[in-house]
Image (cartoon, rainbow, N blue to C red):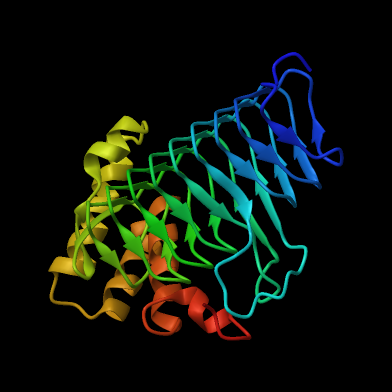
Length: 271
């Protein structure tokens, strides 16, 4: 392994592909699997129970697969699983799961996490997500594909952030953010449809117009939420799958607790 700096400390129990580059003073513990093409910068820390896919980049001082910040954690061998083609900028922290949930924190593919971002225990990130500097995800947070979070956003545990949502900087997110929407504020509230984001993702004009109508009915109209949902899903409307998904997400949030759908699913207190 000629790509490992001589000052790096690698446990003999780690499984590392020969193509991986590891910078100076990085430490890697046992029960770590690192696939091909990864570049791990200087002073990174990967203590154990972590699986890393292909072609990820970890810049200086990343802390990956560290124990969860949970007062009930008792050194159980929970895991962190990372997919392919992710970028983790300086000082990113990624915690493992707990036995209170799925016992695993999961990060998908093609995500970009900027400096000082934190992913709490048992969180699940999909694909193509952008988290700007100092975004903080509490435990058990789910972030769906193509969501984007502005700088210093703080997300309460058990919140779900929907696909293609955009959250403005310094927002305090204490309730689920529906897909396709822009949310901002303290606490964060839905402000508009994420039209620019949808256009960049290649959504058709027809779908964007249908989502715009749904936004106006739900957040700007005089109907109750139930009435708006019924109208949007009526057979004569022939709603597109995106509108159906938006309504389903909102129904889940409504049926949850404290504006968080996943809050109603937990069996033990979350931290």
